[in-house]
Image 1 (cartoon, rainbow, N blue to C red):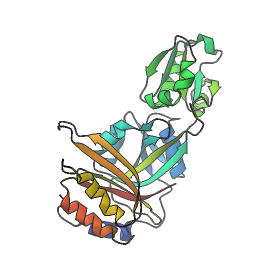
Image 2 (cartoon, rainbow, N blue to C red; image 1 turned 135 degrees about the vertical axis):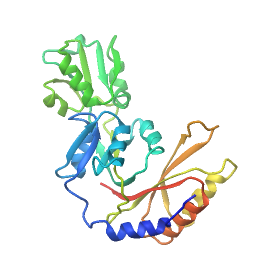
Image 3 (spheres, helix red, strand yellow; image 1 turned 120 degrees about the vertical axis):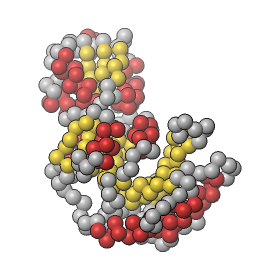
Image 4 (cartoon, rainbow, N blue to C red; image 1 turned 180 degrees about the vertical axis):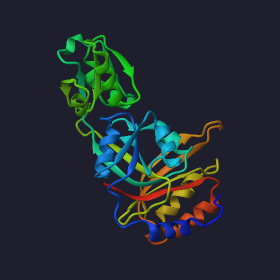
Length: 294
């Protein structure tokens, strides 16, 4: 349950102190290397970001938490393959706030060293999400081994550095120029309607004007109707819930942390008061932010 200052007071202070304009310049942590989709999402949010590349999603959270940067970019969900489970699990571990989100169209290409043709390819390198998004294309290839990488751009760089003529990467076509590769096949995702949502996180609660989405994390008692009781409070205010995600709590016996998104603002009637009520009612209740999606 909540302690110290009321959540509504913290929200009030944030509304008073957050700048009117979202920053154009910032130091931002992104997972991967140059050419990563997180980099492209970052550049869609910030005009002139100073990007720090880190190896893992956990390192993005840590960089923000330790003050190495003001913001971090993380993929949250994909329209074809669903939620990025690792990010949701890490959200339970770290203290942060979402200050903005962005939805990006994702285009994957098969990249290889110059002169390589498709029948030569015996190994494909990429991130598991990209591999899932291109599963139909991969099925058409014969006797190809799949190599999971931490990031699509890292996969492209690894293929380039290997100089092999039997390896390829699935990555953004931008990586062809960055890592001196050729595009063997373009737009190889299962569906052209392929989008990934990224969140921009901050250590401090910042609520910019026109913020119209709220994200929360919470647990409820393990008894019938408990989840309904939580969600019904928002229904009574006419709030549209757009996402409900559950993740198991490590070390517990079939207990879950819930993540919920809704279309509303802390300035809407009754929302700040409800935040205080929930914080004081539930053992675990985390206000993750009020933000705008672009």
